[in-house]
Structure formats: C-alpha cells, structure tokens
Image (cartoon, rainbow, N blue to C red):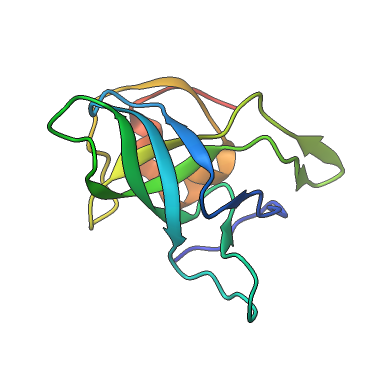
Length: 131
C-alpha cells in the first residue's frame, strides 16, 4: 500500500458508526475491524483517512443490511496534519469497496480527502470534490 504525505491521526476505532457516502445502498455502517492495524495488546484497532476497514451495514436497503463489507475512510472528524496546517471534517464517512479496491457505488455525494487520492484513484474519480 502506498504511503501518505500527511500525518494521519487514527480517529476511527471499532464500533464507530460511519456515514456511507456512496450510492451502493448502505446508509450507516459500523466498524468491526481495521485491515493492517498494528495495534497493541488490549488496545482497540483504529484507522484513519485512507485506511481499509471491515464494516457491518446497519441501515440501508434490505438486501445489503447485515452484510459484512470492506470500506475506505474518506473523512474523519479528528484533525490530520498536512505540512503546517491541520484539516478536519464535519463527520466520519466511508465508501464501500471490493477486494480489488474499486468502489461499489457509481457516485460519491460528499467531498473526499486528498490523502485518499494517493491510494485509491478510482474512488476519487467518482467523487464530487477533493479537499
């Protein structure tokens, strides 16, 4: 996986509820795991912008509710450092992806962090805005 240019604080832990920002059918998802989380004993695995997480769909279309999916975090409330400035968003949001890292939806409603563009160019291609 490609490294990030910003210093991303890991602000999303397990049991965090996220807004699913694409049109795949999911509305609210809950984090149940973080891929590649190098954690410590008895510490919750955490992820930040650009990390792949394992989620359970809580609200959305009936055929996708209770499914286990992969997602990438595109926004988080905890601030991240880009050089000398700090960036934070209004909510925590993710986009569902498949095993190859391609988005399941065809459009993303909100904005996406620039750090996601470095790792997932296909996700940013369908995004409305990049911040």
